[in-house]
Length: 221
Image 1 (cartoon, helix red, strand yellow):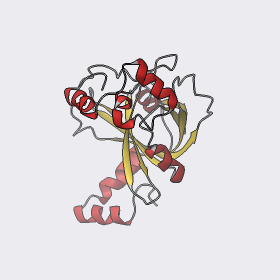
Image 2 (tube, one colour; image 1 turned 120 degrees about the vertical axis):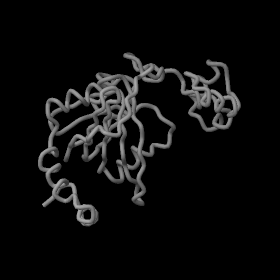
Image 3 (cartoon, one colour; image 1 turned 90 degrees about the horizontal axis):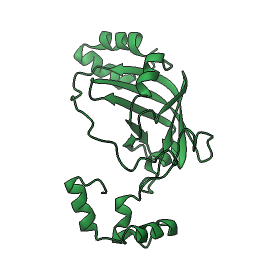
């Protein structure tokens, strides 16, 4: 009985003659807990991709970034990561509350390598990890791991990091106001605290100004 493959996977594997290869990959590479090498890999990353689905079964993929080590392996079957201030839509968090089954993808672009993790998520606003080791986190997501396996790095492009995002909270949990929150179209719906921050950094700007900064790759976009 496969943990990874269903009827449609098997149909395609049979059509392309890869059922034996697929079974061997599951046998050799798939594990039900995080090993020491995988722990070191996960905790060296400064980004990963999180896949979730909503109440209608629609998938979304979110980029999650932070300082290296912002994802913590708690034990061989559990990891945790901070949920920082975002755009207020709470797509990933809302999806996890509805359907806790998630997928995580970690990639090393300098020495091509990638790791997939499947698991079940839980979200908390009063998790003891908020503050230390997760300063600036609004919530914490914990993932109970069900499967983990590496992927072939064949199509991973080799790239180098230029610099960290200035918006990652510092050790005191402080971070600059997101650039898009200065856009004039949002001023009437921002929380009062953020309206005050907008005034402190120079006030609202037209959306065209912000979009131009995005197009130019400005650090404060």
